[in-house]
Length: 328
Image 1: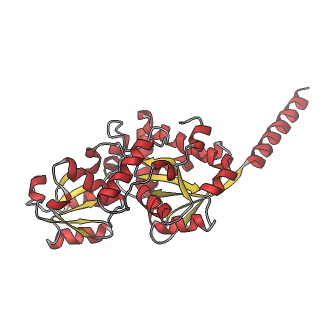
Image 2 (image 1 turned 120 degrees about the vertical axis):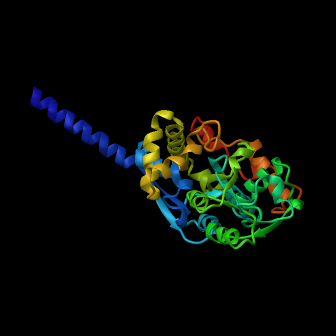
């Protein structure tokens, strides 16, 4: 009897595994090739490491897209990928140009950039009349920096904005003396500080009532393929819950260290803002706040990145997947 029981048990286990394998759905997920393994891809990395997508029956195939973030939207519209990560401003600009892309889950609510300055800059007031090396008009780096400056009493007319694309190029602008201040991401900002260029502030100090990075799909494709997208959304939700849980801080910091190949101390410093619930860098479960999205639209309008009148946020957002996943 015991032998029969064991055989039956093995058969049932094999049947369950086979059934689970048959239910797996492949989803092609695009991300910028340069951001693979970076801190901005941490939700994806954690979800893959912890098996959150597999648990939801999703075989998420990551497709690295070379070039700028506009290439990700292009790949989406061509049907080369089914979903992907992009900065909210680029999604908005693409949709206004005719793309069928739509945001379905939040990735970053409050970006982490350091405003690195020349040693003689001691306060925000010292930036008046100076050249600031920002990125392209309307992108995440520029918008988050402009918003920080505005909250500190520095208006766009108080300084000269110079478009400098790339963290390395902005740091060179700072070192040459041409730029008085530049926004820098991690861990490049920590290296700049070591070289004697102080951090005046961090962009998340301006508050977390915006949405700067999202996961997206094609609206028409998503309407016909809701199930795999709902599963993906649940996988990301599990990733955010895991990262937001203080009990997992050491493990996530270890993932940061391994992914970025940095020291324990650098990994700890890099993940610290993400781990602090008061900073609200990450969404709780990937929820999309339409009011926060609307603020991004208005901020883009203020800097001239999109024309007026400002369109409503539901032109760029589809909440059906978050609702179907029981998240929003």
